[in-house]
Length: 174
Image 1 (cartoon, one colour):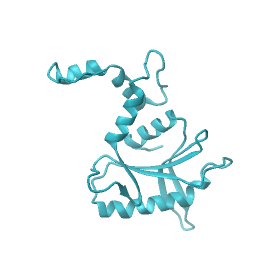
Image 2 (cartoon, rainbow, N blue to C red):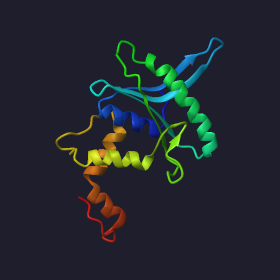
Image 3 (cartoon, helix red, strand yellow):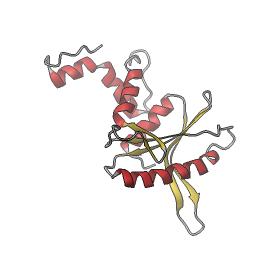
């Protein structure tokens, strides 16, 4: 299944957190062919009874273009997500997030009426958890190669920072 690096990382992260994940789901089949939309990541956490829809972006489009695009994506998501996990009782509320690589949140925190998350914030969340997940006691499984790589980075952060910055950095890396 074709996916980009950021979508893969997000899917791995939410699977690691206990979500059942659907990726790149085409929804709203049209009679004359094609689909109404495609949803990047949709996840359901059965214990937390939480439903999440995440759209990722590596684009550098204007906010006007993004506003139009993500309004449509999130509306299509709300319409079709309830049908994606047949047999499971889903919550009616769907958390929807747009994750951007190229963006800043000084002037806006939403797009399409939903929350914006920056890739830097996602990585901060991931590393906050992984810094206490020793590879010696609890290695992430091989089905999550990007997350496992980040776990290695977290485990060997002192060596990595030393290689990158030498002794010039002046940071305490615990």
